[in-house]
Image 1 (tube, rainbow, N blue to C red):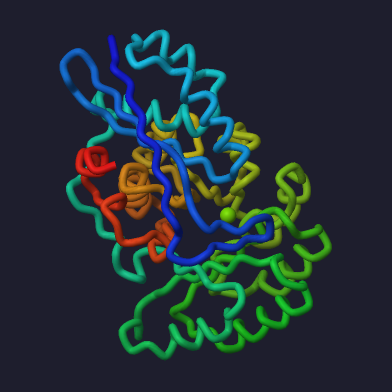
Image 2: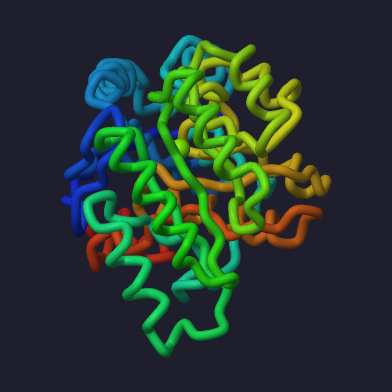
Length: 321
Ligand SMILES: [Mg+2]
């Protein structure tokens, strides 16, 4: 199959900063790619690196892909490229081949249809605000709290306050982004292990501390995130929750198949994609909700600005970019 490859770069400011224990995100840059085959069938993909060093690597590599290339050469060339480039190309190919058929509309716009990202500076106030809001009364809400940002003593105090004040309709996900020691992770696991509101502790220990994570997973549900990206074989081996990011995986078709086959303990998460990459998030999240362990996805919807970049119509995004 002969293909025409085109790319356009994008950059947007997040509506407000997103902070975790390793970094602060203020804006997002990447590329939209378009593949067209001999029959003029079109597929779109998004190269969506999260960190500057990955962005630079992608920039260098994406410039090496020629405008006219056949499928075999393209598949061979990207094998050594950054996972975000592989993800974009494989996504676009899947669209051309009809391996994924997107819907015109997905339903993740309401506050209870995705996890709500807490501002780590105001966790208690935000909890109060949500619980007082009449619009959310009786709704099941999922809150995501990024920790290991402040002093642990303060964060533990906040945790106890949250646990004391949290209504039963609230679910909680706590993400340390790999920054806790085993000692701190165990303290939190001991506080939370019998709590019925907790979904999981997300990547509490360093990416490489797989033994520590396994041990902790016996005490409380542990969701792997960054470890899965560094060690993709854990996708088949990890006996627990997995945070999956289609734009960061070499071939999101594998994730699509897993969800179609009703594999459980998978939660879908954003890397601040535009509307092009978001189609995958929506599609996979819809499938996840039909599986054996439904959980609302982490889409950080309120972090993306109101712009054509977030339409659910890829051609319109492409034309205006
Ligand atoms: Mg995470």
